[in-house]
Length: 255
Image (cartoon, rainbow, N blue to C red; front, side, top):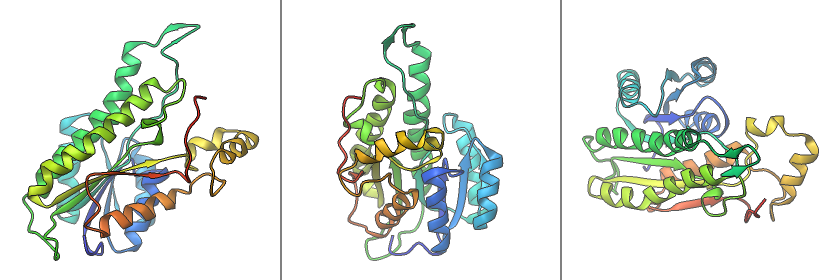
């Protein structure tokens, strides 16, 4: 899109972390932001700070997403920008001292991270393709999905998580090719180690050890650096059908 100001934006998982940082940045650029999140209280707090809209939504449920998108459209108009940040982390070996990983545990990770992302993407795209084109590139919209470097270098204990993020990576190019005829772009971001609430429970020495793994800069990424990349993707129409690593040249070791 050649501009962000005035456009409606959907952000899943927007109540915290990278989703919240993206909401703040796009809001400051004049976007009308709707935050879709299971944690409605946290989403409402964030929405108040950016004059946005908070909607409780389970991305794995078709009707929940349908209703949430309609609520957002009723308030802000049709969305031309969608950022999928909703997802969960998971760490458990396929087989450990307690036995095999329960199959339902694996399914839950795939359901939220892969099926949830696809569910939102398909419903948002179905609405975008009906819009009028804008700008010199004749775009109708852009969708950005959140993967992870675990998709490429999954560590021990990340069988389920790496598989889910690999699934997100795998859907980017075919989705971009399918939606190209409608002027809708699809991109992915694969963050490395990002300083999100997940890291708040980790002792300082462990955080320092993780930061030291990053070649440069030797620190955890800031959530707003993810948001900065989202802005660049949205504004640059030639970015389409690929996944960009945001990792400071990090390549994850087995453990």
